Image 1 (cartoon, rainbow, N blue to C red):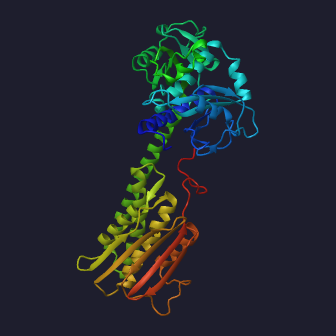
Image 2 (tube, rainbow, N blue to C red; image 1 turned 45 degrees about the vertical axis):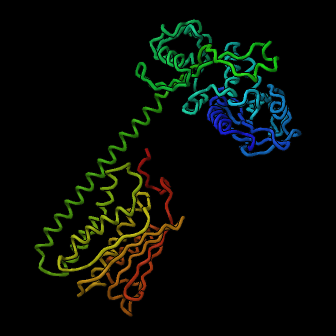
Image 3 (spheres, rainbow, N blue to C red; image 1 turned 30 degrees about the vertical axis):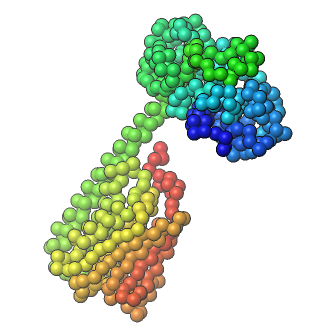
Amino acid sequence: MTSLTDGDRDFLKSIEDQMGIVADVSRAESLLYGPFVNAKTTVLAHRHPHSVGPAYLKDYTQAEVTMLEMPLVVKALTSGRKQRGAQGIFGDGVSVVIEVWPIFSPDRPGKVIGAVSIDSSLLEHERQRRRDRTFRLALRQLKYMLPKGWLTNAENISPFTEPEGVIVVDTEEVIRYASGVAANLYRRLGYLDDLVGRNLKSLRTTDRKLFQQVANTLHCIEQETEIGGRYWVHKAIPLFAGPTRLQQFWPQYHRLPRPRDFRGALIIPHDVTVERQAEQEIRVKNAMIQEIHHRVKNNLQTVAALLRIQKRRVKHKEAALALQDAIQRILSVAVIHEFLSDQDAWAINIKDAVQRIMAQTRQSIVSAEDNITFQLSGPSIWMPAKQATAAALVINELLQNALEHGFEHRRRGTIAVVLTDEGDKIIIYIKDDGHGLPEDFDAKKPRSLGLQIATTLVEEDLKGSLLLFNVEGGTTAQITFDKSLFGGENGWNENES
């Protein structure tokens, strides 16, 4: 690549951006080659077609080839003339017809800086050869335009797929070719007669306006419109004249810069009504799910408020503590539903949820006279809602346990929650500088209901482990569990229909 200027590299990059739509319409592989240096060339980019199964099973980007391996490509690079044949090593056992065009420098007229090839399987080549003459001419023009870099804005055109039709329109806005798929699409709008020969102005669609935009800008354009209650995506690609048969054999014709001669446009319609209706249904469903989460959150907060009233009337300390624990558990679940009501109801940032739970715990349990500090550190970790709910409940129980037992008869201390992302595992530490675990503590036989709940949630819901151990100056709880794949939780997927 040392022989290329910055302008050459930019030009090759623009051609790379334009390769996809040509591969799709041609139903062929498209490969971009660099200059021929040290008896070899390199594949700079490779695009598979979306409109048909690939002829090449691999992506050959960065593959290096020589004259013996790809003689047609090397001939195009060294002679500066188009080559065509069936020679090459990329066939993967499939018979392939190769067309190769040299690419000339935009800054140095006549200097070959690369080549682009359109490689069709023999079956697709024969299918294209039997198609209407007008379409074949448009396809030749499209292929000719690629090495010239004339498909401006093609990088913003979505892939061309099998259900999409093809229409060729001339400079007089008359349809000269319409594929069978295109004809069927327009029948849905009531156009039962043959489209060929009709002027675009006779159609009550946006095709004429789109064509005029293409003719004025000479850019590829894609638009989505609603016509007759149906949603349509139209792609439009300008077509420029290629060389005549005599000009093809004139060596200097391709080396010299040529002005673009607009000859019409390729219009590709696609009915996306079913897709848009499905998207609308999903949006409505998600809105309903979010409303349900909002109502669940409100109901849980109402239950918590009722329990607070009951707590004030309870005279026994033990009963009051039990009610306070229940309030905290309910509010921890409410936090998750609050997050789900504000987003797309499929994932929770557990760091945000823990922050909210810590704030609730400080407000509800820690008295104003106590100097208990809460700390949270670690990265944001996104979890499926079911996993996040279990994790939030466990963290809530361990926070309460630290306050009730680690800081009993103490008014000063620190509780820290540390989140760690180990790739396929998540480890959460809850550390305190309190009294520590008693000498007779048995993790397998926890005395408190909170630890029993936490252990059950970790082992059964998170499928992980919970360890509690003393460290110098306090206690640490370590929760370890595997990450869940989004949408992979058995029996729990909010977007299931």
